[in-house]
Length: 326
Length: 77
Image 1: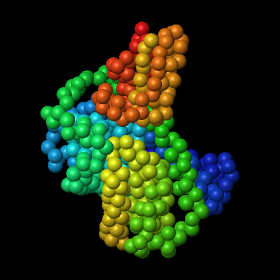
Image 2: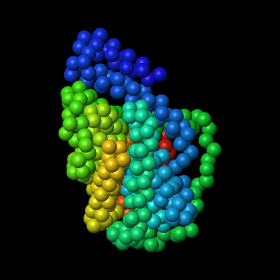
Image 3: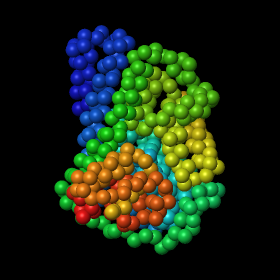
């Protein structure tokens, strides 16, 4: 079904623009048109459909649910909710404070916040259509595992001690009986449609430029980097290439939408899967703007711990996957 | 005069919300004092989990999105 976008891209690049098939420019343009048209089509359809289903879930319900359930299960659920709710960096502070003041342990809250940027419906959709279901499954499992393990670790070191004083106070004075939610409202189809349309506009408004940037970079890599370059230079998964990839990902700030088209090109050009995943996850999850925001509720020490935690986990994951796949 | 606070971390939606509230108030000739509250403690005070949120004279009226014009007009009455 999706081959229609290949045909469209072939037609625009080679017939309409008269580029030569197999040339660097021709290949880049063809790749760019195919991926952007395909991605936007899928985004519009999927964001709308998923928002229809998600319309009755709100963040207050997630909080009430997490506050009621036992701790071990909590990390898994925190991470799962992080994956299914859309992420916007401007919502991380209100969510953090809302969870904390409901008495939810910092670790469970961080399971939510660490997983949220890594996994969402847009990321999963792009992965499925660009790199196939196997890598999608690996990506999702790793993303959730890092969220869960990170959360457990933070509770083990009693990370709440390292919150800003007002946030710690809110946690300690929380009523652990849990806040009573507003209850599930039955939504009419029209209410769902209105919610889904608003979500569609909101999410597209935030991600469209990342699609162009991501696919643009992917297209350049695709057309201009020789096919065997990564395979020749980094193809055997040299151990140092993984932490290098993680470090290279930090100053690059992108969301999952922008990085996945790049991921596709890197894999096609022979960069080992583990190294590619380490680079992409680091780009998405370990970003300075996000950390500056979290400074409002955490001390530098805790931020540094979380930062190191992410870097170490991405490296471990990269090594493990290269070890298995090479 | 109504005292209106817009709670949020300074994201573009919060800025738009504050501008919209001011614009509607000007249209209706209601005198208002609109302030953007970026201090995270305010979120705790009003139990707000999604921003932008609007507080009118100390009472939380709205959270999670840019409010529409008719909503704002109601608050100003």
